[in-house]
Amino acid sequence: MGRKRRVQPAPRRVRWPLPTLLLAVALVYGRLFFAGFVRFDDDLHVYANPFLDPPTVRSVLRLWQHAYEHLYVPLAYTLYAALARLAAVAAHMDALIGDTVSLSPAPFHAAGVVLHAVNAWLCFRLVRRLTGRDGAAWPCALLFALHPLQLESVAWISELRGISSATLLLLALNAFVLSRQASAARRRRTLWLACLPLLAGAMLCKPSAAAAPLAALAIDRVVLRTPWRKALLAAGAWAVVVLPFVLITRLVQDVAGAERSAAWQRPFIAGDALAFYLWKTVLPLDLCVDYGRTPQVAMATGWGYLAWLVPVGWLALAFRNRRARPLAWLGGLLFVVFLLPTSGLVPFAYQAYSTVADRYAYLALLGAGLVLADLVALLDLRSPAFATRGAVVLLGALAARAFGQGGYWLTSADLLRHTIAVNPAAAFAYNNLGDAELARGELPAALADYQASAHHDPGRAKAYINLAEVYTALDRPAEAAAEIARAQQAPHRTPDDLSNLGVVLMKMNEPERGLQALGAAVAADPASPTYLFNQANALSAAGKLAEAEVAFRRCIQLAPSLVGAHTGLGIVLAETGRLPDAAAEFRAALALRPDDAAALDDLRRAERMLQRP
Image (cartoon, rainbow, N blue to C red; front, side, top):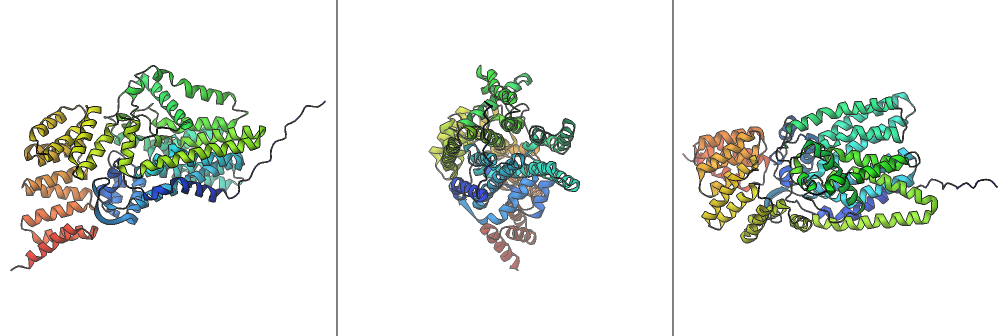
């Protein structure tokens, strides 16, 4: 008898893949359109960004010329600026975050959801081009779209940087594959050259796209079977594009506050991080924005030195079966490659809080999707019905989990309290809850949260400064002074801490010490409009009008669209008798923000004084 041969199923075509994918994304992430800003860097990057207050051509150009907050991602900030023009509203106090805002969060959230849908579609097209099978592309794209680990990237306005970077990188990878598959030489060359500006754009949105050359190399070798020489030349060209941005990032990014680790520990830290991401991919429970998994925490137990065995063992298994299951091998490679820049092999700033974060896994889930696609194809050979039903159940469970996780992103307080529930030692969450409570006048609640923040992170000055502000508001000067002393003795003090310290000392009626701290903040970072603005206001309040004028003018030079700086300068000019110049500054403020009631009142007052004989 002859050997029995298994009949291969015909390639499946997915009906209406794009509308179905858009519907799935809308169902899972649609309620984020009604979410607000969160006190987790949204102030830094968006609603209190001095270059978006409001955005102008001059302010955007400056973001291209200089780093902002130790980041050089001008294309991402250009996107923020464009959205800010659409999101402009009358300035008002947002009680949920305890800050005055002049932007609506809705356009930013809409952009995040739309870009994520685009990225999921680009994943579908990439895998479809690599395999020629909808049956492989569809589960990969759906896992990428619906996995709960993606919530942080989609829901967090500040992470539009990462999600827009991913869009450009996925476009580059699609163009790269098309260039390899094109038959005409001219089309191959055009598509290949198109990859390079897309790759540069990805780096200008977020430098974690630095893994792109390795990703292209993996695709080239594993699926396209490009010879080593040709594949390495292509990856080398991509590396030439990436390297300057990597060097810029290392120059401008402040990693002084990062949790330090010995060089020999870093491979173990990276192994621990990769094992963590594998676990959260398989079982996405207890997700939050601060896991507190610093290098010190990771290396505190024996597991930290053994965790690398999990990802290495998984990769070894995939490598062993690479010829029979190339899609799983490529998926394993891409999962690891996209995580490498933030794995801890090289120190980065956020390691002061945690080496791992959900947003770092955004592109890595393309690799996880490829593994799922390969598993579905394997099961399809044995039982097509079981493979389909199993994939539907798994993806449905992930979608339900992601929908539930999205509820924590609707308000700032929900996000921060959920973070504390998952990680009770998340000092930043207590601190940021306290900030909103203090702004609303809820002093006992703010006091309790600031005390918890100081308890969980006693080495940082931030919580002590905030405690001093609360004690000042409660008219308890002795306790406020004690907290100021603790802040000045804390080992971790940033320029931001110095500026805030100066503001609080001014509120404590200690102008000499306040101005000294504010001057130290400006000296530490002379390019910060925020520190200059705080110093200028303090100098004005202290009656040092000549120095205040200089500080306001320097602030305007750095951030010409900062409305408060024009108003403050106008007040100083009015108080020194230069009413025409003062009126000009008030008009400049109103030109930037026509609804600024304070600037309008100041302008009218100055004009009335000018009309007097």
